[in-house]
Amino acid sequence: MYKRYSSIVQLKSREIFFLALKFVGPVLLFSLISVSCGTGEKIIDSPISFSANRIELTKEYIHQHYGITPKDISIVPKIIVLHWTAIGTYDSTFAVFNKETLEGSRPELASAGQLNVSIQFVVDRDGTIHRLMPETWMARHCIGLNYESIGVENVGGVNDKDDLTAAQVKSDIYLVRYLVKKYPTIEYLIGHMEYMDFEGTPLWLEKDPNYHTMKYDPGERFMEAVREGVKDLHLKGVTQILNEPTNLK
Ligand SMILES: [Zn+2]
Image (cartoon, rainbow, N blue to C red; front, side, top):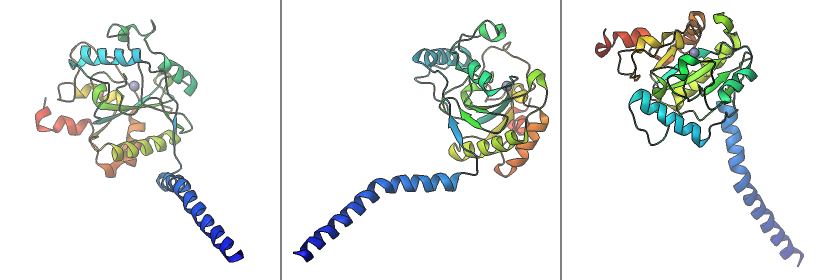
């Protein structure tokens, strides 16, 4: 009797063990993967408002500016564009991107559509990385290249002062590596200040030849530091695209 009871107990213990393994296993495995992939940095999801209306406005933008009638707003990323916000804090930056439509403060953009500006990632001054929207939804952040690019804003650069931090350099390097690994279609890394050099190349999709704004972000020093940190990825910049045989001006 005792023996029999004992074997039932044993069987139950074993079942419980395997049952526990079935549920706990994936969690453990996920934790292990997270730990092994992490290099100290992590990405925090901080979603901005992106209603069906904002999606519709995005589709309209794609149609109006790029002559494409998309079924959704997903993109195939080829370029990473780095920026600075020209806004001093993360909270104020989030508030700007959280609005779905443009307000009167940016008339140079409003004439080109009511869709508000947005960005996939914002890096705070201490290096904290926020993901504001799905990585491959089109964000309005770089004239001509929105439909092929993922953007990273860095908090700082108020009045075009080059004040981005070493922590931001480190986080941008991490993000570029993360994105290139995840999306093998990415071939280019540029600063927003370099975007107009893509005009006339196959990557430039803007139909309106007069739609430009002058940009200085995120500065030469920052771009050089990030490029140095990812040089083994052999991403192309402006020099390479201008030298590609089809793009010679
Ligand atoms: Zn910019």
